[in-house]
Length: 340
Image 1 (cartoon, rainbow, N blue to C red):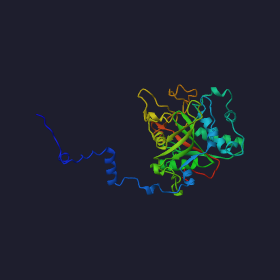
Image 2: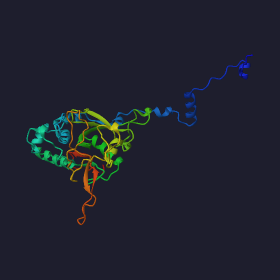
Image 3: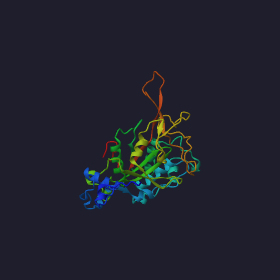
């Protein structure tokens, strides 16, 4: 005996209702919650000036990158790049282009330059001092300092939002250059881009009241690199740069390999340290060994005393992150430490 099962609708000759697809259900829920796109949001006039406020990429900054660098000269090469942007004819200024070789000669280094191991004496304060020497040699005036530094001597004491605002202001100015001290390397930020959250705002840009931007979400920084072993230009999220500059040992970030995320020194390893005078020692890190221009001079951490004023008891030393953003300017009236 066969058994048949019929619904009332089928007996009455009605077609059964098709099940709702996941998309239909999702649209229904979005409609109830008011999350559907409001077409009024897409109706705005496109202003090129607003778009330009959301991005800055002066090609002259890239043209001034001293690439390729010498094997261990990333700090000096980055400094020459910035100096040429501020003063040389490449960026429409008046000074003849300064080569890496001329800069090294001015600073007192004899050839062959490829054998100089800059690591033991190149640090943040060193680049600031060298900038003054290069300016003096050409009879021009400039100013330099720390745009954002979280720890130790010369820490800026500003928030990451304030630092982003200052950085975007600097990269929008033809009179300011920036150097980024990252793990075992120096390179040159050359621009930024603020990506809106919604696709419908792709051409909205930033109003005058929204510049300089201070919201890290969606903000990318373009980086120019003097090393032939890395990409000429790459981009990093500002949020990643903040993590790099504000991390504390034994944790650190590698801005040339952001995909690795937070890294940690093994207990058997000793973090790169120096004497607390902003002069990184040569690093023993083996990263990027395939690169022809492996830079091993600027370290992650320095070693500073916990109580520098104490003379009675031995000083306790602890590693501290010395990564930072340095600014260099031909306008001596600018002061990023106080905000702009």
